[in-house]
Image 1 (cartoon, one colour):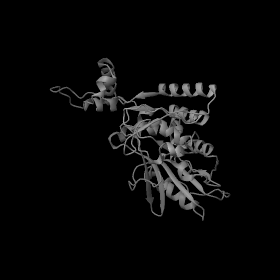
Image 2: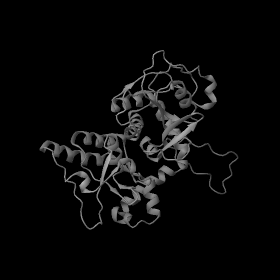
Image 3: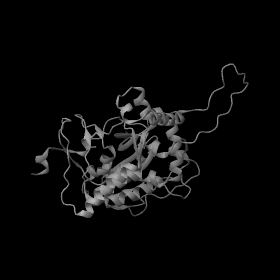
Image 4: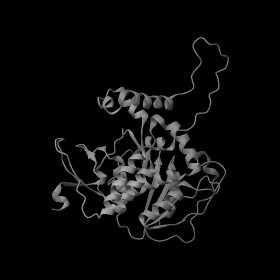
Amino acid sequence: MTVRDAGEVISITDLVPDEHNARVHSARGVGLIADGMGKVGAARSIVIDEGCRVLAGNATVRAAAQAGISRILVVDADGRTLVAVRRRGLDESGKRALAYYDNRTGELSSWDPEQIAADAAQGLPAMSELFSEAELAEILSRAEVQAATPEATEPGAEEAVAPEREPQEPDPLGKVLSRLLVRPTWNRKRTVSFLSIRKWNAATKAADLAALTAAKDECGPDLVETVATDVVEHLRPLLGTCSGLWIATPPPGYHSGGPHLATEAARVVAARLGCARVQAFADRPRSSRSHPRHFQERGELALWPEVPEGPCLLLDDIATTGTTIEECARLLRRGELVLPVVWLYETGLDAAAPGI
């Protein structure tokens, strides 16, 4: 019996992530699932509804795309029969490794207290069955702490000047990343179309922007891994076996010589896609931040004398107006295919990118 005989086969791009997933998965956890799939193959199952929305297994779907797995075998179930995945062809060592991967990755995720608080407020019956009163109270208290702001002056208290508020610590990066919307979108800036992968969550944008600004300056491995993973899992089905592909990034708009997020993410993407990362533009660092009001301070955008032939993946990390990616793409377009991609973009046509 072939895979197709066992049930319907769809593309991984047909699946719709759960925007209300109460489980927060770290980049390390997703990477570990993908690593396991690469070494012992796919064996995990996921649960989807009639509209292909992922009810269980969101991290597994992300990891599968990262591992280059694009086919999904769909088995219809009525809830009265347990579905077992029979994994063939593993030796005893592979079977033990599969079990460890399956159990270890579950330890690298955590609960989203704000989502659980929202579900509890809606009175979902499962909440009382899954969590004890003490457990639920502890989770909800964490949600209250995260949402808390400094208390205002008590009614009746006379204050000539409003008290200064202590600066709040930015949310942990994993929490911030879980709130960003994964919404692949085609955008247009003058004559250039480019793909963006994530968008801001309007409800939390101010806090998320502050946290991501700090995280981008640090350019830590978790953020680099998240950007690279998003790019690979969304572009691999589009690129297929694209011959001669190379990757470039815009020159840093604000850079003091330390790690640059787009550049570091491009290194990882290039390694996973098996292509070269090339510095296509001359550096133009300056002391002010990368923001549209500082664009006039930048030096002239210039290509390096020798730029490879063949299709180019032009990757930027976070864009506000799309001006930088548009300028770089226009300079690179010399008869060759250029695919401009921005990981996080503010606006867009709000239309799902075809094939993604």
